[in-house]
Figure 1 (cartoon, rainbow, N blue to C red):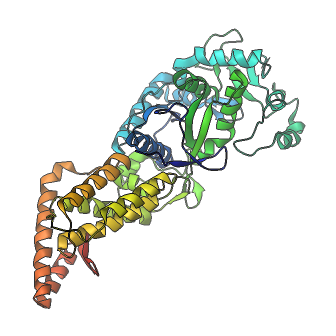
Figure 2: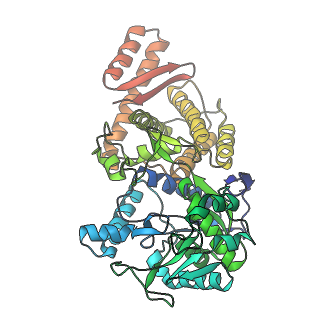
Length: 491
């Protein structure tokens, strides 16, 4: 398939044609979770966004190595390189070994991802398993004059780096502004400048997670793991690095500085960032205490929720917004997504019941072109879904007999929906245990609507209206359109 995929490169602040460094191979690195608590709705967005990218690149026949890390050490409560490690703090409070905390919440994260039908990455490295690689990066930075030791800790020297390279190019921060805003803090810490960041922290006596090094018994800084693991598994230069917009600064900015300072060149060609999930306009996050865990979403056990929402409803809800747009949580939006998802699945089930004709009155090729144009435009899923719903109208009209389709076009339409809805968007039919009942329901509704259509042709309006009204009472709304009719389950 000809490559026409354009993606928005945060580094260049524009959409660019995706051209891999070593086609057909693609290296993709995405920042994964810090596993000290249950995954929440905010964690689902990058997981689904980059699962979509992974799926589409694979569909385009690229050979993708997808690396998504697990942060199990080094992420401090205070990202200014102070305070406790988030996992160590949780372990202390729960009187557990830190790796017990890591294993428990990693398992729960994987369960949530499986529920959301997020594909497993090619490699899922842990920070604690790559301490040696992180030390090697530190050695390079010290040798190149971009790091310094202070009381057993190692810090990245942002001011020294900025004399040779542009620090802040990803986020738009200017080193001059950082210097002018923070000079008054000099002398208050062991850093040369407050905006320098930790590469290695000397562990306090009470700190649980520690490793021996030539500098001190300590642990790596949070930013270092992704630089080290990205290089180990994808090479000194790779294609795409993704993550949430909240990681753009300082985390990803520091990654660029580390890789450039260590190897003399930037590691990443395309930087991609998904926007945030908000609740009442405020970013959703553990630190703000306004998060809804995914297990809560699926069970409905949260005061903010009016009901439980299935994993596919949550996935469909997120795909209805462009990944670079903010997405505000509301029960109304989730209920609308639930209806939309059910309508899509009902239409796909209806495809198997359509009879082919000698000619087509619908244009499947045009629908396919529009769908792929949306995907190639920086993964524009809301436009793609809008086109797919245009196709749903076609499917319902075909079922009603007001449109016709050839066997070849029908097969093409089935392939399009199976490929885009299931393989690329990653949606799947839910409630498979009730598959027989769902199939029976489809048959009953199809029979009633065919009967209603015949009644309308015979101008038996009373019978036609009665069928529609009885279906409405059962929670199945029938809408007459110029193309025939549409129906959806609303209860």
